[in-house]
Image (cartoon, rainbow, N blue to C red):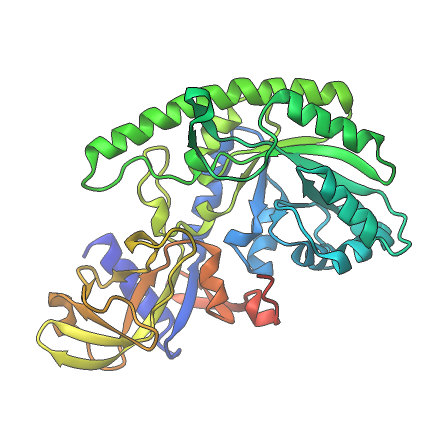
Length: 400
């Protein structure tokens, strides 16, 4: 029996009492992945990206482990909810236009002490001030550095379009703007190198493309390490008590941790290890989050149909954004239908061994987005479900 076949047998036994659709997290794999992130971070704390987890219980579990500290959130409403729930260090990774949220933040000492907001433009400070409604708490601020690699005088850009702050001079001027502004305190710098951390460099069947990605990423890491160090020096000249410099992501943990200027690493997807993280040379994780759909039809030889399954991930549309049939091994989509809103035909010889009501296990393309489809996660240890916990959705919260 292969390791994957053994996992399938465990998951089927653990969930035999549960009807599909059902979502699980294998805690042995989850914990092993957490250990790997800490090992790669080489002594620097890992801040957990909540968008990649979207379950309070699992956020609490990983933050209780040595090597993890703080949450990186994705909306202001989520940040405030986490802070009210007892999370004491929440970095909002994206600028917000949530006026009601800023009014609440500025009026509550506990929230203001726990939550740090992201800015990259003076207009964002104006919005916060216009939202205060009399609240006088000092708002903690983090500046985001654009990490993109610019070539040929900027005519070629590699990397996500995020912050407009690219050069040390631009970031330092933004730091001076914050320093001059009453009601704000600059505490951090964030730089997410998504073109390194979030792009696999070992694309199956594409050796030349894989080599090109590795060359690009090596050049991007060198350029960013030099520029990030210069940015930190420039900002510390303005704000010498800067508390943190955050960088990285699941795919670049060890590279970013090696930079002296970086004080903490961000990661989240590496806990669940969705399918988009299969194509990396820098690490090998264990798939920890899966969902199962029930077989409801057997249309013919080598074909079964499962209920639902059309759960595409965000990003540029493509086959890599689709869930992948994982267990039993050897199933594939019908290219004329793909994963459907209500039903999904699956092809392959393993279909002939599946009966009505059997489970087919899938992996989502991205990590936390799976939790937008399910109210609960069943936590599996060995071949037993040891707990059932709510996702954000199960707590009645959908922040985006």
